Amino acid sequence: MKKVLVLIAVVGLVAWAMAPGTQAGLKTASSSASVAQLIIDGDDYNGDGTPDIAIFRESNGGWYTNGQANVFWGMTDDVPASGDFTGDGTTNRVVFRPSSGRWWIHGVYPGWPGGRAYYWGRTDDIPVPADYNGDFYTDTAVWRPSTAQWWIKGQAPVYFGKDGDAPVPGDYDGDGSADIAIFRPAHVDPHFTYDGRWWVRGLTTVWFGTTGDKAVPGDYNGDGTTQMAVFRPSYGRWYINGEGYVTFGSSDSVPRAFDYDGDGTADRTVFNPSSSQWIIYQKTTISFGQTGDQAVSGTAY
Ligand SMILES: [Ca+2]
Ligand SMILES: [Ca+2]
Ligand SMILES: [Ca+2]
Ligand SMILES: [Ca+2]
Image 1 (cartoon, rainbow, N blue to C red):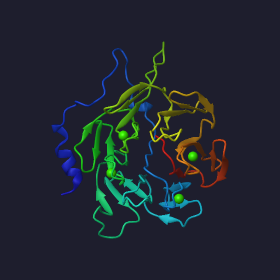
Image 2: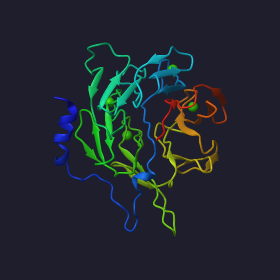
Image 3: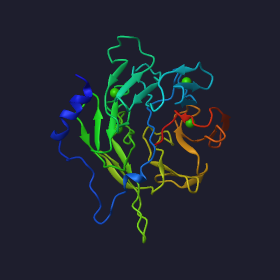
Image 4: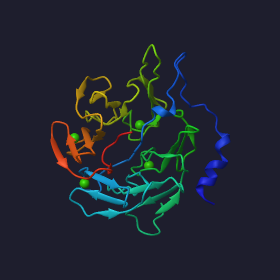
């Protein structure tokens, strides 16, 4: 039986025990405040220990990595969901196909126990690959906005968040396991704009960010924990929780928390689709990709 059928069967059995609540009097953002989400768990596509600048071209299923051979894996409407699914230190190119709820893992031999193509999730799901159990293998996982469920393969489903939230998994406590987390954009009414809120399951809740922000959590200071961070397109500003902001990028920039030089700290990075330029804050500018490409290096939501 397909896994997706199993998922549907148990939907009604789990309580809302872990869902984050709502501040009294604070309405939450509608799903219109949600952002186009791309979540990957790794960008070292050749396993040399250095993250790679890479793009996915939906039109031809092409994965283009600066300085490496092109790989064709996936097709139109597939969602990139890269990660180290084989636990060998090399990021696998992976796509999630919403139309069928199927995952396709590149770079594994036929018959690999983890599977090369398998069903996990359904059409409206957002793939949220991450290493949730700390075994150094990326776990197949989806977040379902309509029911706010996290379906991590091999684990019981968890309710966390609500429709309109952005899933932002990361290792917020630095214990080596990714934590389930969401960013809830702010509610805006005619009188006041409320702060957004970050919820990390079992750990913390923080007021940080606002409507229109794009979440770019990453380890910016290299201490081994994920820091909450947002990019504010309207001002081209990067805010890291607890620190000041820097102005970098513009309203059409695609932000990424990307460890460009592999030194263990995330570098503020923007991909500008119109010019196909990757700009790494205070470091370099590289032309790679073309209009319509998706940047599949670094994290952003
Ligand atoms: Ca590399
Ligand atoms: Ca894992
Ligand atoms: Ca953790
Ligand atoms: Ca770095």
